[in-house]
Amino acid sequence: MSQAITKIAIVGGGTAGWLSAAIIAAHHKTNQTQGIQVCLVESSDIPTVGVGEGTWPTMKNTLKEIGIKEAEMFAHCKAVFKQGGKFVDWVHGNGDFYYHPFTVPLGYGRIDLAPYVEDIEQYAVESNFQHHVCEAGLAPRTISEAEYSGQCNYAYHIDAGAFGELLKNHCKQQLNVQHIVDTVEHVTLAADGSIASIELAKTTPIEADLYIDCTGFASMLLGGKLNVPFMKMDKYLFNDSALALQVPYEKADSPIASHTIATAQNAGWIWDIGLTHRRGTGHVYSSEFLSDDEAEQNLRKYLGKAADGLTPRKISFQSGHREKFWEKNCVAVGMAAGFVEPLEATAIMLVEISAKFVAENLPPTKAIMPTVAKRFNQQMRYRWTRIIDFLKLHYMLTKRPEPYWQAHTQEDSIPDSLKEDLAIWGYRGPTNSDFESAVELFPAASYQYVLYGMGFKPDFSQQAHLYQQQQQAQTIIQRNQKITQQMLQTLPSHREYIEKWLASAKTN
Ligand SMILES: Cc1cc2nc3c(=O)[nH]c(=O)nc-3n(C[C@H](O)[C@H](O)[C@H](O)COP(=O)(O)OP(=O)(O)OC[C@H]3O[C@@H](n4cnc5c(N)ncnc54)[C@H](O)[C@@H]3O)c2cc1C
Image (cartoon, rainbow, N blue to C red; front, side, top):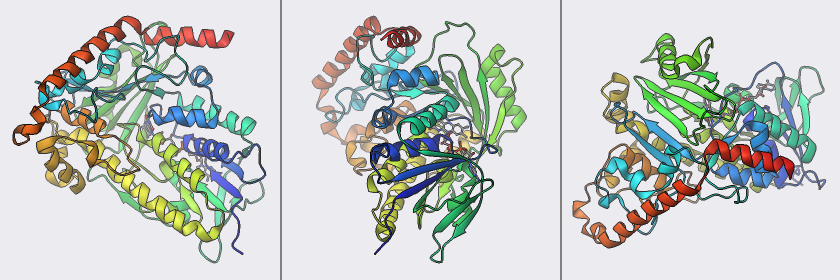
C-alpha cells in the first residue's frame, strides 16, 4: 500500500515558514486530531530577510482562518490598515500621482466608467471614494464597526519581525506545531530522488512525508538539493537591489498613511510604509542604472532629517522564480520559490495562496502526490506570469525620460502576454473576461486603476456601445462624490481610530 502522508517538515522560520505552518495546521486541526503532524525547523544563525511589511486583502481571511483576532494582530505587530498603493511620479515625474485602491470602482462589472472620465489619469478619483479616504488620512471603518469589516476594502501594514513572532507563538501554543531551533546541514535523498531526511547540526535527523522549503533566497531543498532551475525575469523587471531603512515619526502623534507610498526615482522607487511606531522605508533599484551610493543619496533626500544618524541595510536579489515549485515530496513557499520586486506586495500573498493549496490538497498518500504537484506547478506558473505582467504594467507606460524608465518601455522588455493584453485594451480597456481563471490574483479593477492611472486611454471610438450609458455613468460618478463626502465626514483619522480601538479592545 502507498505510504500515508502524516508528517510535514517546514524548513525556515521567516514569514513564509510560520504562515505556512499556521495555515496548514489550522486547516488540518492538528491541535485536535491525531492525523497530521507539522514541525518547523529554523536556524538561529541565519537571519530572516526582515522586510515584507505590506500585505494584500487576502490576509484578512487568512488571519480569521488561522484563529488570530485582528486587535491582537494590531497590538502585537504595531499594525495599521493598508487601503491600497499611491504611486507618485511614475508617469511624468513632476509630482503626478494615482492610487491603486483595494475597493473596486462603483458600478464595477456593470459599466466601465473610463469612456466617461475626461482626464483618464483621474480614473480612480472619479470612480472610487477610497482615493479621497486615503488622501485625507482616514481609517476604513468607524469604531462601531466589527473587526474584519470596513466601509473600504483593506489589508495591513505589519512589523515583519513581530508578525513572525505572533505566528510562531500562535503555532506553538494553539496549533500544536513542533518547533526545532537548529540548522539543516544536509539533505538526504531516497532512491527515487525524493527527500528522505534532513540532517541537523545539533539534533537528530528529521524524516517527513512532505518537506516545505521556506529557506528564503537559499532555496536549500528545492533549488539546492533537488536542482530545480531558477528562471530569471530581469529582462522584464530590472530591479535587483534594495536599501532598507526604518525611520521614526517626526512626532508621537504624526499622521499614519493608510496606504503604501511608492515614489518613483531616477532608476527605481522608494517604498514608505507607516506603522504605529515608525515608518519602514527603502529604495528598490537596478544596479545596472544606479550605484548604491546614488541610491542612498536618493533615499536620504526623500527622508530628510528622519534618516539622520541611521544607516540603510542593503539587500540584493534576483528577479525570477523556480521552474517548478513542487518537485517529488518538496514544495517551495516564499522566497525559496521565487521573488520579484515588492511593488504590489505579492510575495506574502503568494505564501498564503501556496500554503492554502497545500493544506486543501494535501494528498492522503504519496501515490497521488505527482498529480497534486502537477496542478500546483501549473497554477503557480500562471500566477507568476500574471504578477510579472501586472508589475511591468506599472513601468511600461511611463513618460519619464531617464534611461532606466525608457528601457522599461522598449518592446523587448515587455512580456508577450502583456503585449497581447495591451493590444486589446487599446480599444476597450480591461474587463473581467480578460481574467477568467479561477486562480486570478488581481481583478480587472486592479489593471484598470494602474492602466488608466498611468495615463493610458483606450481609443473607445469604434466601440459606440461603450458610450451609450451616459446617464448611468453620470449617476454613478455623482454617487461616488456623495459617498466620498459622507465618508470624509464620518470616518475617523487613521491614528485616532487605531489608538481608540486598541484601548477599548484592551478593556473588553
Ligand atoms: C526589499 C524587500 C521588500 C519586501 N517587501 C515586501 C512587502 O511589502 N510585501 C510582501 O508581501 N513581501 C515583501 N517582500 C518579500 C517578503 O519579505 C518575503 O516574501 C517574506 O518575508 C518571506 O520570506 P521567507 O520566509 O521566504 O524568507 P526569510 O525571511 O529569508 O526566512 C528564511 C528562513 O529560513 C531559515 N533557514 C535558511 N537556511 C536554513 C537552514 N539551512 N536550516 C534551517 N533554517 C534555515 C532562516 O533561519 C529563516 O528563518 C520584500 C522583500 C524584499 C527583499
